[in-house]
Image 1 (spheres, helix red, strand yellow):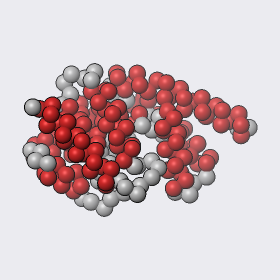
Image 2 (cartoon, rainbow, N blue to C red):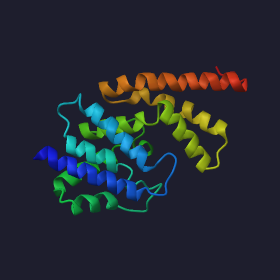
Image 3 (cartoon, rainbow, N blue to C red):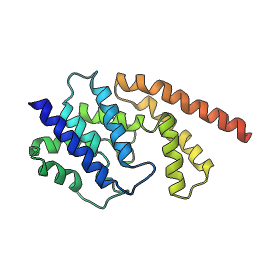
Image 4 (cartoon, rainbow, N blue to C red):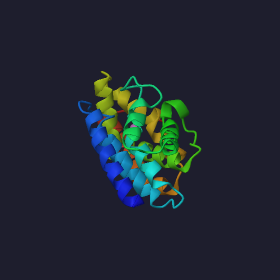
Length: 198
Ligand code: NI
């Protein structure tokens, strides 16, 4: 029963996210939230203490009230979805608490105080690494009119630091080849542009 309920809720949240992000492209679109959900479930599979329902909903809804995209307050989009689907208030609070702890700008590299928050934060950060991370960085830079070199600098300022701040063993394992792929990309960039870096 519990699994069926969660599955139906997850399917509804996926549809909600697709509708909410319709028209967005680049770094923060529905596909990002769906990847974060998928990765969070991969990590959660190795964390038996994780509440899967809270982690799944927090992963899918983690950008639903992102101030860069929406002018909602107090997780209004998230809370409206959850109450419409009869999610108990205690569960909704835990989902919102996990979402609050995910943001890089708000929390830097500090670790969330709940396991579900740590898992979703790891999944969100993994989406900034690897081939997906490279594609998102240039898409975001383009959206904001930044030259390519500014996006390259973002790898050094932020993305290469993410691996060492991951919370879970499973995420560290997933990060290894994604981080190496970023480094390989940057080496190739420097070769093609004739840059010397220390
Ligand atoms: Ni995100």
